[in-house]
Image (cartoon, rainbow, N blue to C red; front, side, top):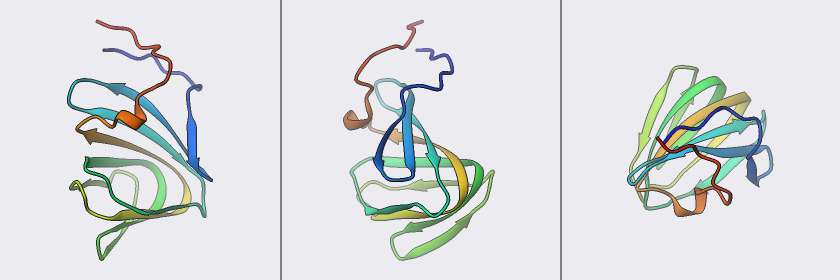
Length: 115
């Protein structure tokens, strides 16, 4: 599967946080998050393992009872069913991979180019 860059296709479930699924396969799904300064991702959990990378900005990641100040280039892996959230300290961009595929993150309109 290949997806060309596009500025469209973002959705927002939480104020200040926009997301777009970039690509997905049978076992993984990759999502880009555009995070506005001072926004918060409330604590939540899901059965999916979540591996991420901060491209730009700065945020505080809350995983279970731990807090991490995240800078560009930092990465993380959150096991499934572990409560986590985030405080966005600067406008930020993060990329995360979920496994298994999050059905709720699948695009409504399939614009992907198959290889």
